[in-house]
Length: 267
Image (cartoon, rainbow, N blue to C red):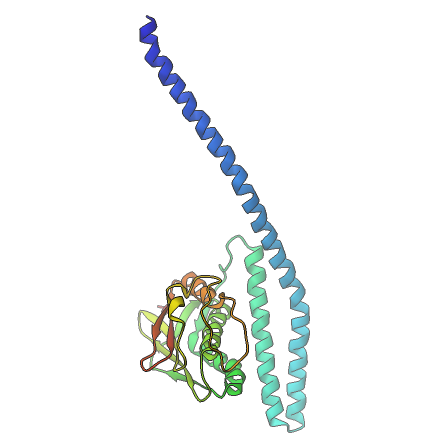
């Protein structure tokens, strides 16, 4: 009788041990997740607070830029009017970035808002915005637009940030007298923008981790003095993938780098 009960006792003990182990795992998991949830909540509040506080001064700056542009037009200062107009465009784009950050921090599904985006118009805006930096570095910044439709679905401000980051990266690795081209092409399946430079290229040791956050190579920067934090390209990939697309790197024939942002075409 005692022998017949022994297997049952062992099975019961094993089951109790398993349940105890699962209980410990559940408790430890909850304890480990709680600080992460608190950290994410703190981060979300910080982003929301900072975004909210930046909106007012950006609105003021944007209004002042518009007033300067109007005054310059009224007084016949054509060059100043054009520069003030570009400044107003940049402040509006920055305000859109702040709005996106605020939306991401205050909605359950960040980035859920979207619409039809004409990527050709975004490319033109980016070229105008970055023209001053290119000129300062004696770099020619041009747009090569192929035939096709360039409408995609998503956030225009987010896609603009991605392209600005790619152009900024190209200018940072470009030499005076060089060229950066935004090559836009579209098909029934997808729309792509290739940012092509004939500059110094990229550090070979960093190519494998180009899109990893906080990874930097040996920057050779002639056009603008800056410090790379290894965030820009990672953000570009995040934006691309959140839109159902991606970004890839290839070497430019003859020297330099090409980054191609590809997105699904709007059907």
